[in-house]
Amino acid sequence: MKEKEWSNSVGRPSNKAQRRAEIVNALQSVIARVGYEGASIQAISKEAGIASGLVHYHFQNKQEILVELVHSLTETSVTRYEELKKNASNAQEKIEAFIDAALALGDGSNEQAVAAWVVIGAESIRQEEVRELYKFTIARQLEELRNLLQNYAHEKKKNLSANSIEHISTMVISAIEGAYQLAATASKITPRNYAATTLKGMVFSVLDK
Amino acid sequence: MKEKEWSNSVGRPSNKAQRRAEIVNALQSVIARVGYEGASIQAISKEAGIASGLVHYHFQNKQEILVELVHSLTETSVTRYEELKKNASNAQEKIEAFIDAALALGDGSNEQAVAAWVVIGAESIRQEEVRELYKFTIARQLEELRNLLQNYAHEKKKNLSANSIEHISTMVISAIEGAYQLAATASKITPRNYAATTLKGMVFSVLDK
Image 1 (cartoon, rainbow over the protein chains, first blue to last red):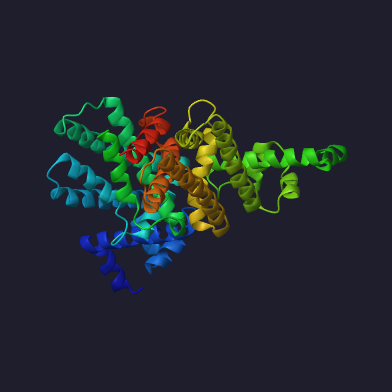
Image 2 (cartoon, rainbow over the protein chains, first blue to last red):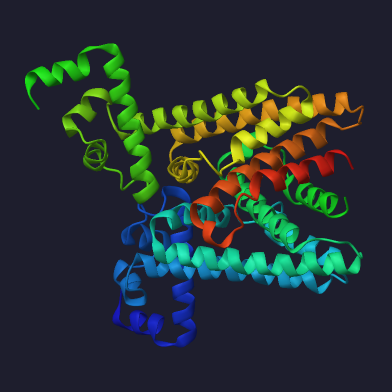
């Protein structure tokens, strides 16, 4: 890489952010294919089409890239939910937006992101920093979902104990995480686009029981 | 290890099976702690408290141990289900037995087995042989569950399309896989023993809707 290109690519803030995003994206592709341990800095830089020195310039180590990937996946998911929620006028539609944002994996879905998230979930068994981030994401989702279910009960004038709300919210998050697992490894033996519709059906059935 | 001990420990078939089981069990402990790639033959033999040569005597490589672990976890789960099913007198109780066998993770549950299964799920993204085994297990569960739901519909004289049965079965398996994920990484922020009861509640609500 020529001196001029180097200074260009790391000099301006916008370029810097873009370069970091490219590296994070490259990590996502690589771990979706070979797992986290197999994702060497060399493999990441090759995937990004840049020199490995540039990866080292932007990130101290592989874990730092992984942490940014977790943030980026979470942010994408939150943004998608916020977008869908804009058109929701009541609690039921907001719950639907929440589930659709997570599971409407048909068009516009990102297989690599789903596979990467499954790898991150397993990696969080092993790495405390990843686990803390993973738990933070789950905790935030649980809180949002608990609020939505509470509003739903209020709007529909239903009695739902705090316990029920907590249990149903947790099971919805479980179902979402498990649907990612099946999408990443067993999509050939599962029905197409079953997830969001079926989960919504189960949630509203139990809420309206 | 002395010559005599060696021949003792690998000579008789019952000893051989037991030794293999110990090695498989050691792999389970190690991957639950450090993941699959981190599980070196050395770490496995240390965990099992045996010489690494003995691991090599019983298994060609690490993947062969992993394959046996997948079989062993599947078998344990099937046996638990068969046991619970014995006391079930109708389709509803059999569905409950299925979910309890998978998710009644309170007493007698095996945290290491759950964590190992999550690691295996993620590993099956990367390794085709593991993926085929994982898919085979999921396919068998899906088939059993489809049959149970069909029998339930028949017994309760309900109209359930083949599509609905397939979608609900798949979502139940997703929920089970995801509950393992949360149990392995986020158990501190999820309610105790929510999984089996909540999933049964959701399934029968949607079936009886």
